[in-house]
Each structure stands twice: as structure tokens, then as C-alpha cells.
Image 1 (cartoon, rainbow, N blue to C red):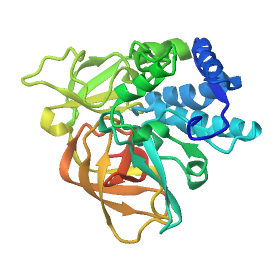
Image 2: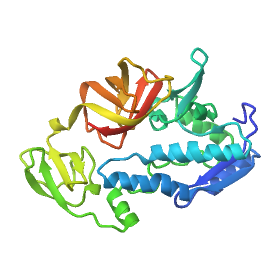
Image 3: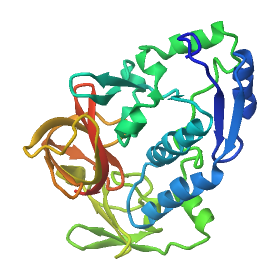
Image 4: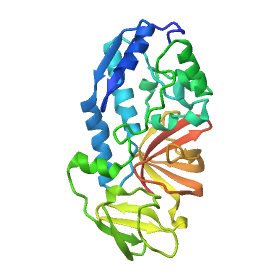
Length: 326
């Protein structure tokens, strides 16, 4: 951004735990930029951690990184930018923003580096937000080239490790974190088959994810996987690998980016149902209440309520929403 002629300031948000303010400050000093640190930990707790816990408690499998991007990086941070008199925020996300002069709309597109593409976690961005966002790394095809630029400019963090996906659960033990966070107890319940047959006891619905096989401790004639979680019934439904596949889903709170209005006719798209999932061909049916029904050409494995369904037209993000039913 400096090389492109922009007048820049550096900012860093303290969200959870110890933030690497020294590294951020050193980068700003290297480029003779003002540095600001913002403590947004309370917003992070209310907008990211608390909804993450609630989502698990009702049997969903949330993606807190999406909510962090939605409310912190492209919510609170954009507000701070306006207070500082900045026209844009530039982040290190691997995605691209382009203005389509033909339609008069900003487009969110995949990064040129397919392995690092983060467009999936940015599906919620509005036209107003996209107009004030710069994503320089989206144009790079190789992260090694990014590190090389940092090294050439004498940045101490040139070879710093990649950040963790979920900063507040670094060990991946979601159930432990939720129990410690709430101080509550999540009672044992029944492992059941789809026909209601009880197979044994689970250790609380918050401890399982759709598609999970390990750690069930259930003896059966063939391998079993988690098919569904019901907080209301306090049951975890198990089934065989073939039962994990679904031909359709419904997504709520759908955000359209590439189109001004939901199309009246069905739309052919490719869909990701998880961050690193392969795209699958589908037909999208849009409804006036902000929901979208997706019908896949081929059944998809382990679709999980709480995750995002993001629609693509080639490298363009059509939009996305939260999976609510399969």
C-alpha cells in the first residue's frame, strides 16, 4: 500500500489473549507509519465467543472465524478507520475485490493462490464494505513471494508461522473450552441410530461434530459416524458412512454480493459447505425471507448446520449464508 502511494497508518486489535503488538509496532516503525492498538476484547467476547458457545449448545457446528471477520475486522475496524480519517482498510486476507463497471457492483473474488483462498469466510461483505476494502495479497500466487517481500523490507515477522484458525481454542478441544467458559454441565445422553435404537451414552452434545468417527467408543458391525446432534432431545444420532451424504440443504440469512436482487429463477452455482471443502455443483433456489435452498448434483458428505454455504460462479462469490437444515 505504501509502494502504491497511499498514506498509511497501522492498527492492531487485541481480541483474545496476548496480542503481538510489538511485532505490529515494529512493522509500523520500519515504514514510518503511526501505530494504533485497539482493545476490542469485549466486542470479541460478545460477538464471537458467546455466539460460538450458544451455537454448540443448540447442536450446531459454528465457524467463529466468519463472525470475527464480520463483526471485528470488517465491522469495528472499519468504524475505527473512519474515526482516523482513513478511506480504506487493507488486510492480509487472500481474496480479491474488484469493481464491475458493467453492473456498478463490487465483486468479491477468489485469491489467485487457490491453496490460501479465504473468500469463503468473507461471504457476508456488503457493497458499502467492499468499497472501502483493499486485499493486496489476493493477487499473489505464492505465499513464499509474500514472505520474500517482507524479508527484503527488513520485517522481523517475515518468517512468522501462520496464524491459528480459532485463536481462543488453540488445542481444538471445543468441549473443554465451552465447559470452562460457561461453568455449566452438559449431561450425558443417548447415542442412537436413525431408527431410535439406543447404542450407548454420549458425554454431552457439545463434544461432537457432524462426520466424527473417533472417540465414540461404540461397538457396531461397521464404522459409525455422527449424523446429527439434538440438544433438545440430548441425543447424538450415529450412522454408517453412506448415511452421511445429503442431496440438499437450506441456508438462512443469505447475503448476495454479485447480484442486486435474489434471482426469481433457479441459479446454477458451485458451492462450498466448509472452509476447505471442494466445490460441488448445485442449483440454488432463492426465497424472499433470506433463505436459499441448494440441491446438489451429487450428494455431499457431512453437511453441518452452523457452517456456511458459500456460492460461486467461477472465481466470483455469488453470496452465502448459514446452513440451518439438511
